[in-house]
Length: 197
Image 1 (cartoon, rainbow, N blue to C red):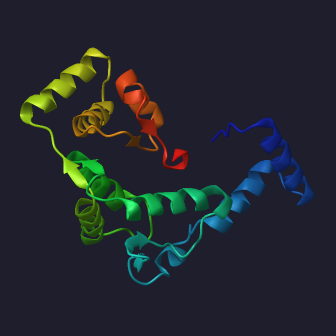
Image 2 (tube, rainbow, N blue to C red; image 1 turned 135 degrees about the horizontal axis):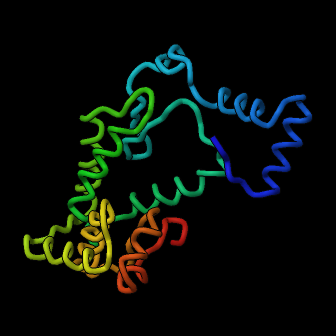
């Protein structure tokens, strides 16, 4: 495995490893072993599924907190956006399938179960207005995407973007900025991450 990191991060890793009398590889391996439940007994120690009801949302808790400096603001902002959302906010219907498939296939221990994934999908559909495409709109969106050299799974992003335009939304909220901005200037001007709001 090769890591491509900024020079200042590489220098810091080398200094930390050297201070412990380790190679950078051994130092990184120790860090990873400390943070990940790589042993079977660690992975199965938590009882239940990891899904808990917290502040009005069904959320997944691993029992191992993520580094706050990395995710705290993003999680807080997403939670606030979702809890403040209403029926004047939109979600493409096809996104519900993607959410359920993604949640239930995450490499977590314990795994998010099918019923737990459905519970989250129901939270989304209860809070947001779902936008669907007619057969004609669906085919039209795919034709437009294919004429722009959009191929593969990016065709699904084109369907979501078409729903955003159909709804007349002001913002297409996503972490997947690159794939949505390549769908053309009309879509690109709407794209924002939760941290930009």
